[in-house]
Image (cartoon, rainbow, N blue to C red):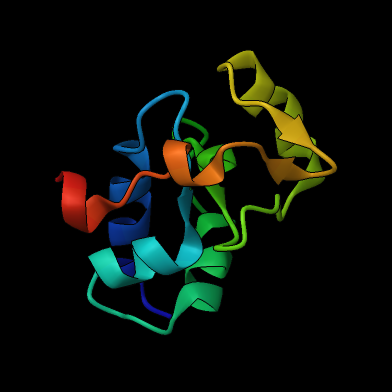
Length: 98
């Protein structure tokens, strides 16, 4: 995983609107590496603090990092049993919305 990939992941993640969520897979597709969602997760570990990593979740709507629940709820996102309620309605697809 190179620095360019990491930077692209961070830049796309910064664009996820407040109160919305996206998936690791959607970010991978947006940066041109479909099927590299695990790499996106690893890259996000090194993103600066201003990157809203809490808005990136698994494609099933489940939180990958339970600690992110409070940050999501502060943005009005309802989380039940570590899953985003109304996931499909809140989903932000960078390929569709950019």
